[in-house]
Length: 189
Length: 169
Image: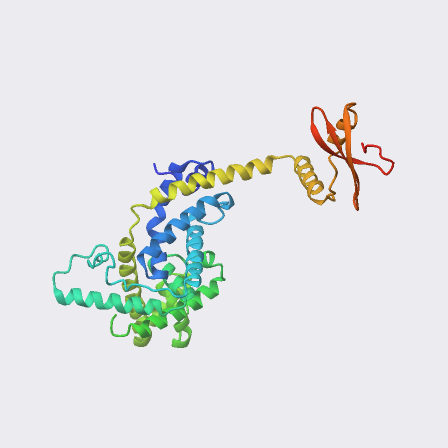
């Protein structure tokens, strides 16, 4: 039976690296999704994932289990992303529809069959480009709330924990961000 | 049983919560009833659902493209360092308070005590006690009086003396 997060945290606090490795494997993709959504750059996202877990391990003694581990990890990742954007104001991003590692197309959303139709592929790529631009046009706070809700599926309560803002603020940010995206993606959806 | 009638202006701010399943049961039902009868609110709901599906599908696919294959290899040395720092912090925490206070006080004494250029008294005393010393020269300077003496064993020595010519202890 798989150990609970809290059990793994306690073992990690005692210096058990294998337990921490299990936590890393459990949450690395989720953190990557948030980081990539925030920074729109794969290499930066990969760095943020590493920094997040390194910081989490260093501060593991402070985690008391009063919130879910993943909301705590998200909070660390979000703060690192904001710091990264501030630090690197000359931030250059590579559009995500083009793979900067070799030009191969990005994988399709999970569960979707491969698209043989060139028209479908072009349309998919176009939606991705527009989506990328639309998300990038949001402020980090609005971007985070959209990513945590739409991609990670966090509840309003959990998002308020991650971003350290009241639930009402989460709701208003989400409403605003969605309207922005709908305006920018009109015709693509 | 009376049914509440919801208007568009009441429903509009609740549509996000409806899509996210964040409304309470009764409100959820009221919004659903309203949307079923209102083409405008129903269209807004459909747009929100389409946005959710587009963002969710593409976001997850993008995340899968982040290369995390070397993550643990890069992370593990950092964990070892963190363990060392944590052990050091724990050790500090378990050090008795009096020991820390003593160490701080000793450091303060060392760094804050006035520094005077003391003459090499031990050498002077040692040399002054030896019988076979030959006086070479007396030097008067602003800082005091010195004598240059020749010692059989130790060679030529500079010794600080008092105004009367006695060796200083």
